[in-house]
Image (spheres, rainbow, N blue to C red):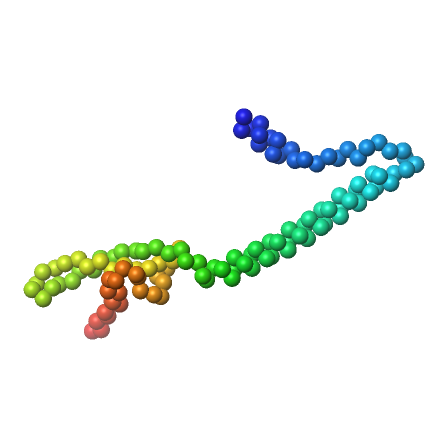
Length: 119
């Protein structure tokens, strides 16, 4: 059933039969041809305009996209009594996995940058 429905989708709804006219009165056939050409031009112009507006709207909205998720890392710390524990560090990242410049809403301490020891 699905292939039959898909074939109807591919066929379209155009009617190319313009009727039978006298060769001495070709006006209706010429009018249909001009109307089709004008419809194609107008449809493409409107489609381009809609595409530009939707693209601009998506570009303006991109910096305000609130989709983010949390990445949890674990760091090892030594307590004052000598025990070694794992402490969670939550990092807020955007949809591409890049850290967002704001603290995670979990209340955990931010990850400290690694220390470099010069010799």
